[in-house]
Length: 195
Image (cartoon, rainbow, N blue to C red; front, side):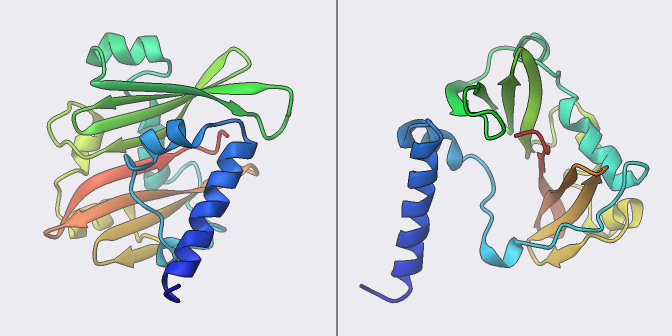
């Protein structure tokens, strides 16, 4: 086996085994996995000491529920999605509880919700459309220097991505990722700390 393929194969097998043990079938998971930006090893950052809740980058994170905080609210605002995926996933804090994961796919926008014990949270949001009316238009398709000038210095800067680290009180941190293309912000990816 080629030396570069072995780590990839091991990673894939580990992912499938984790998925299987969590009760999510590989087929269901793989239907949505490709929708989000990939996290590759050089994009993994130490998320300690992130921007706190009174910062401008954290303010962008708070847009995570700008389209609604439940499936009904989102559909009421945006209409029926182009695709919808739903599956059950084991709650890692309580093994006898199942979370329902719902992914709504629109043109240029993907929203993933998780229902935990009758409560719904936005888990992930990926937006790349500059045309969807939302506060994200303040950053999408804008020049990178203007965005950095407004939000402050990202934790990590790559040629094709900015990563801001957001601190959620004593719960932990999550990355806010912004894609870069032609020196402009081409997409924004937010992930909540809810699991």
